[in-house]
Each structure stands twice: as C-alpha cells, then as structure tokens.
Image 1 (cartoon, rainbow, N blue to C red):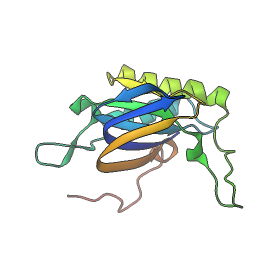
Image 2: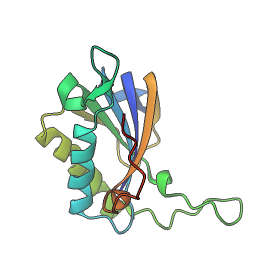
Image 3: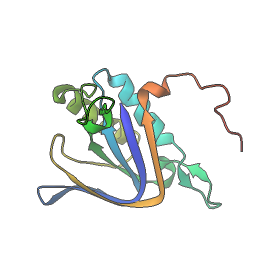
Image 4: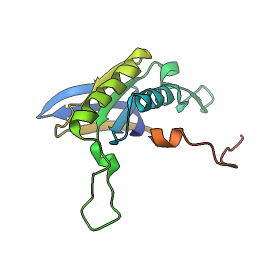
Length: 160
C-alpha cells in the first residue's frame, strides 16, 4: 500500500461537478493498493500516518501528529501510484490491485483512521475525480507499507 500524503490547509474532491469530500486542516492522502496488500498493510500505514509528526509546534518544529493537531484526512484512491514506467511510453499498472481487492482495502484504511479518532472524508472509488487543495508548507511525503517492514539502513538516521 502506497500513500502520497500532503499537509493541507484544506482539500476537496469533486465527482461529476459535486463535492463528495472535503476537509480543513489535515492531510490529503492519495492511496494506492498493490495486488499483494492485506489488512496488515492497512493497519501499518494507518498507524504510521496517524502518528507521523509532520505538523509544526509553537517553535516551528515537526513535533505534532495529525492526532495532536485535531486534523482530518481526505482519502482518495489512486491506482496510478503503482505505475511501472520502465518499458515503453505507456505505463503499466499490473502491480495495482484489481478493483474488487482494492476497494475494500481503501475502505478499511479510511475506517482504520476513523478508529484512531481522525475525521475522514473520501473520494469515490473508481470515479473520475478532481482534487483541489491548498498545500501547507508544502509538506509532501511518500510512504509505502512494504518499506515500513524493512530494517532501517545503517546511517539512515539523522540526529538533530
């Protein structure tokens, strides 16, 4: 499961001219589901995102999480996060989960955030969506559940 998370002042998603989800301060989460993802990936990624300290404290340091600031999440499914562009000019999406697998996992991810007391709005799975946002920072991160399972590389920690 792969997420592109953007810290936002506000974000919304529109389908067929109608706003179907909107948030104020929080995170826009573009979520891709891989064909090998499971409920374990859902929980791992939801916990990481809920606790990730990417909001500034009163000193301007990244010390606060989405939970700490009382922010919301806008979850938008995006299978294109699993594009393979290594060959040819047209991306391949064979690593992305099929809709019958992906849709329940996207719903489970939104539910996992709600279970952590995070207000969640969503897009519409499989729909053509227009996403609007006002970045805050900007702060944009890519998090992959497969990488969260890997041991930290030696020297990868920066002490400050």
